[in-house]
Length: 253
Ligand code: ASP
Ligand code: MG
Image (cartoon, rainbow, N blue to C red; front, side, top):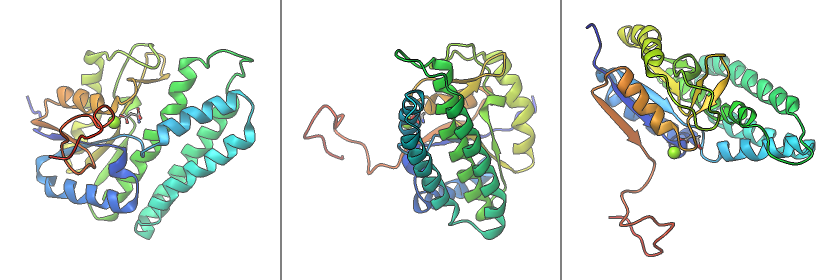
């Protein structure tokens, strides 16, 4: 059917947390470049939590704390950009700045409920900035090392219902989107770098697939492209004998 066999390579937050980790990701992608890789990324470690707590602060009108957190988010991403080639830096920095500006205004637009919860729709659109930002870094890192890459916002790919915070995927539409937008890139030898975790509903509003959802994004990409393989990369020392959050004496095998 003209489908190119490809592989999905998903990288978690600790894999993209700094330039050293990101360069390791580039090396991993390079080794499998001839297998038509599609990269899916989550947010930098800790950024989704930071975005969500910043949303609370913004809703409480604690603007000074919001400023502080925004500065932290900017710093963490700009530190990585500094490791890129100058030409790539010139391409990526404006994109990062644009995302940050949008994040800033999204936080300012938040309704300020005197009490009670922030609408999940708002939480989703702000949580999405973690992956939106990280994907620029990963694409930039690949380009910096001469691997053709293009960042793709998964809101143009993953069609969902409007269950904010835990959206359901419309696979029919999503499959069409992947065929239209991702296959042409693969055919040209370009590595698509897709934001995990996020999608959009029929009105174009940002949705998320639930916390930790970027592994699921990789699975969605795999199914929609009939990938040969889905790889979930984690920056850990190895498998453990048990969940270390539950079993104190858990150790690496
Ligand atoms: N960044 C999102 C989260 O922290 C999704 C993910 O990492 O899988 O929940
Ligand atoms: Mg995760």
